[in-house]
Amino acid sequence: MARACRRVDRDPSEVRLLPISKTVDEARIRLSVAAGCRELGENKVQEAYRKWEALSDLPELRWSLVGHLQTNKAKRVARFASEFQALDSPRVAEALDRRLQALGRGLDVFVQVNTSGEASKYGLPPEEVVAFVRRLPAYASLRVRGLMTLALLSSDSSWVRQCFVRLRELRERIRQEVPDGDRVAGLSMGMSGDFEAAIEEGATVVRVGQAIYGARSLPDSHFWPSP
Ligand SMILES: *Cc1c(COP(=O)(O)O)cnc(C)c1O
Image 1 (cartoon, rainbow, N blue to C red):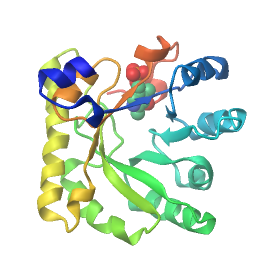
Image 2: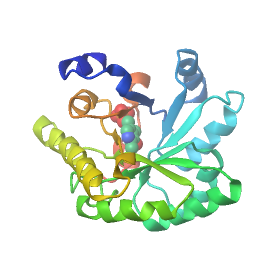
Image 3: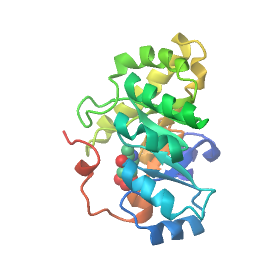
Image 4: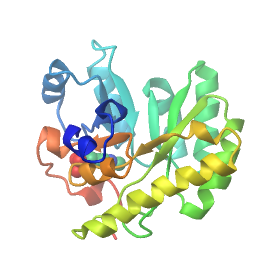
């Protein structure tokens, strides 16, 4: 990460590493906490909640959900998560806000954008993002922090990079067109295979699992739809 920052003259402290611990068992998560991890990202609510309970002796840990959410799980997320990176519909925003208000909690959110048009069916199409962001102030407990994307899963690095560029350009549009649009400052993009390119294109959060914890046995299609 530091090397990628240096290549484009960025300060490494601008880029946050979010370790993604899906499928990783409690014992190995504890090792990573001992090594300095203070936040964990999970794709599925059930798994995240189970780990949050099992690791409740580590209250300083922040939990981030990075996977698609169904409204019937909003109550659970409202209880324990500090951040939700896959916001992509008014229905989910509404459900989360209602549950959060009831608990007197807030939640950092990233709006998920489908920048590839095919690698993932989740996320808003880029042309709908500005209108969606304009609606977010109605949900008082959601603090919008930025945009999130999953790049195309491709060995062609110029296609991957295009997804990152698209997300950055969308942030610029929001800054120009939405009142208070500079709140949407974060760019969550880049995973184990492409975090360096993402940093070069402006990522402020990289979500890295396998490069920290080792290869997963479950295929990615278990966590997001394949093309
Ligand atoms: C699993 C996952 C990641 C991390 O992928 P790795 O290949 O393990 O780095 C990033 N973002 C999301 C949404 C994920 O589900």
